[in-house]
Each structure stands twice: as C-alpha cells, then as structure tokens.
Image (cartoon, rainbow, N blue to C red):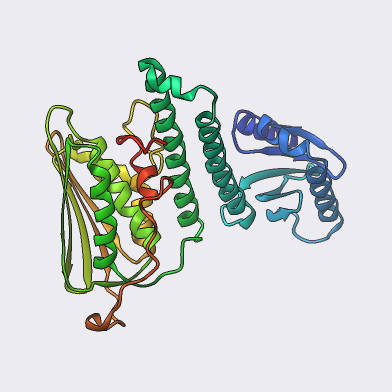
Length: 363
C-alpha cells in the first residue's frame, strides 16, 4: 500500500507545477489534476470521454501496464496518453498539443485572418473619424496618426509571419511549380526599389542574371524570403551612415543562389545559426516575434534549398539562400508566370513587411 501512495505522491509532485496538463483518474472520477489540466477537465465532454475510456480499460484483460494514446472529440487539438499507476487502479492522463492536427492548423489560420481583419477595421475607423482633417493640421495629431498607421501595419506584419510560420510548420505551404526566379525577382525588387524611395538613407542595388532561372518553387515563398531578408537588413542599419543592401542572383551548377549583403550593424559571429531559431530576437523594443529568419529558413527548405548566414559585428551581414534548379525545364523556352502580385496595393506584402522601418502609405 505504501508503494501505491508513494507512486501517486511522486506523480503529484512531478506534475503539480508543470505546464503539461496532467490528471490522476479512476473509472468514476478525477482524483487529482494540476492547474494546467483544470481547464481541460472543466469541459464535461472531455472528462466523460476520459472516464469512459478508463472504465473500458479496467474491464479488459491483458497487459494493463502499457500506456495508450488517444484523441478525444472534446479536445481534438490534444493527444492524451493514459498510463496505469502500478496496481492502484488509478491512471495518469497527460495531454500534449497535437501539432499534426488539422484542427490546430485551421485555428491558427483563422486567428491570423481575424488579426488582419481587426487591424483593417481599426484603421478604417480611425480614418473615418470626424474632424480628421484637423489632426493633419496639428503637429501632435499628425504624429499620432502616423504612429497609429505604422502600428496597424506592424500588427499585420506580425500576423503575416505567423501565418507563414504556421503553414510551413504544418506542411500547408503553397504547392510548388515551375517558376522563373530571375523574372520574379526583377518584378519584386523593382517594387522594393520604389518603396525604398521613401527611405533615402537606404540604397538597394540588384544584380540579377538575364537568363531565365527556373526553379521548382512558389512566388509566395520567394516573397517571404526576400522581404524578410530586406526588412532584416534595414533594421540593422546605422543612423549616421548610408545603408547599402545588395541583392544578387547567380547560378552555380545545379543551384540558384540569392545573396543579400548589407553594411549594417551585423551580429556577433556566434549568432549565425541561432538567428534561425523560432522566436529568437535581439530586438529590445519587443516589436518583433523573432520569426522572420525562421520563415526564411523554412521557406527555403520547403523548396529543397538551404540558408547560410555570415555576420561581422559592426560590419554587416551576408545571407545566402540556395535553391535547386528545376532540371525538368528547358531554360531557353521558359516563359514567365503571369500571376504577379500587386505589390503597389496599400495592403500589399511590401508595405506590410517594411512597415517597421518605412512609413506605410497614408490615405
């Protein structure tokens, strides 16, 4: 008997402060649960299903010591692991997020869509305020409008990277197809250069091969890579000197390589790998989710490529994205895609992703 009590006490001590939902149950009730599990067990459907499953287990013959994993209709985004506790007749139930769950993916996508909609409605409401013209005539009021304008776009930027991260992490990224990378980069960087006119302390230079460069890729993933890298370079610039960003596209053997070099503040060399970890950021303003370079890495890998970063503290950075060429395509007969995004729309990707460093368009 002492062994049973000791086992149960050990389980309680181990999981009492854990963020992992844990509960001890018998066939009739929940004998104990930690705070993380309380919300789940408050759902009567979840508790009923758990108790029903445990009741069926206790009636079965055979090996009752093996752990079992199951989904419950009451909490489809969780996986529940049920483990018998010695010979006590009690069971330990642990719940963990099921990252493969389509329900979880849909929930994340829906929250991103709601974030975009919320920001757009907020912005539209402010722009329709009565006497708004008076704010434009007042220095303080105009500054407030500009700040609100940028903050709205910044929220959409966070939502955009979160959406990309969710898609890539859950294998819901856009379908890959034959894409002339050189042509698409010329269109994208042309729009970027136009945007940069609003930021005279930044000079963007491009060197893109004239010949078609076919990859098996996606315009959305390429845009995610380039806009995040350009955004990252701009944020690294020094206030007292011209920031020079150079984007090149070259082919080497069976690969196309996009390289972005800047003369910004760079980072200590030891961060060359760490910057690609999700939610890693050195931004003390807390305006970054730390997902930009993670999205770059995941997007490149989705297209069969890789990313390499080189930093020099105080001297800038070089980031190269290597993407395999589509060997099935005859380059000389390739034709550019006609599905080019409208990069000049006020809610376009470029306006959103560069909102932290360049004022978005005012109405």
